[in-house]
Image (cartoon, rainbow, N blue to C red; front, side, top):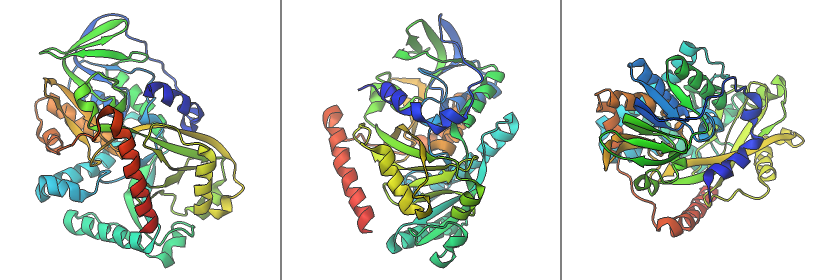
Length: 433
């Protein structure tokens, strides 16, 4: 199985690809070169790091195997949300309350960073304020509200609690029992944003190479990245390719798994229908372990995600399956036409916490992975903290690096079926909760 090939087939039907214009193509690497920092991966994390490093005066090259934004950065749900994919209790247990507060505050900084970069670089990416967390049962509602209470009491982060009686003013759906609203989170067109970051990086002097797959890494005092038509030698390297590193750093692979995630988009429904269904125009996500997430695009198309695959196989009848979930959420859309259905792989860690660090065999090689489907905002912050570390201040980077991670059990042959069984259990828990 080659994930790049599978993803290329899936992304042909992407709403984002059809509604974003690629104004610039970046040339492939065709010769040997030298730079301060070489970055593997032309997604949000790699480009964010490139911008931060260029601002600090570093010479930077970005090597992207396909095209900028090809992976999860360019086709995700578009939701920029506070916190991490894991429960904050995981970070508290590992790092203690003071460092957990530092991590949470950085996730809020990540939201501000998106707004700041949009303004600084003039990126037109359809940003909208607001995130609505919803619960599909009374038990889930209690957990949702308890989580909101904890964030306010322990972290000083208030959100508006919304009872079932008041839900129609926020979302018109029979599925939900309660909600919380966060005005500081929001949503955007992720491919437009990623392409905007690439233009910004190039404008700062970053050299971007598309169509340049890294075939191997030689760790040393000055690491070397090898490609089909040239080599890059650098003082420092950043691996920001997540599940697409394809053997470049084998020691990292066992700590993340590729998980397929899928989205459909309806035809444009018109602003009156959009405002009827989600009056607050927020991004929406439930608090199930295997969750649904959705939002309206700028053209009033509903983008609805909810299927995942832990086996790397694309689910059968993908569009029909997601359409059924969509209609259960919004019955008035029973006759709405599905215009796009697409997907691809994200990287998850065992505990769903981000996995940042340096290669043991080569401390000059940094890595960012394990965003676990919650990376739209956090990738930008990750790019900032790794740039700080490369420039000599690793305080914030090392806070994340202290989070412990376990390998997925079973090795290459058994870890995928083991994960499939585990996720079946979590789906059952979601149904029974």
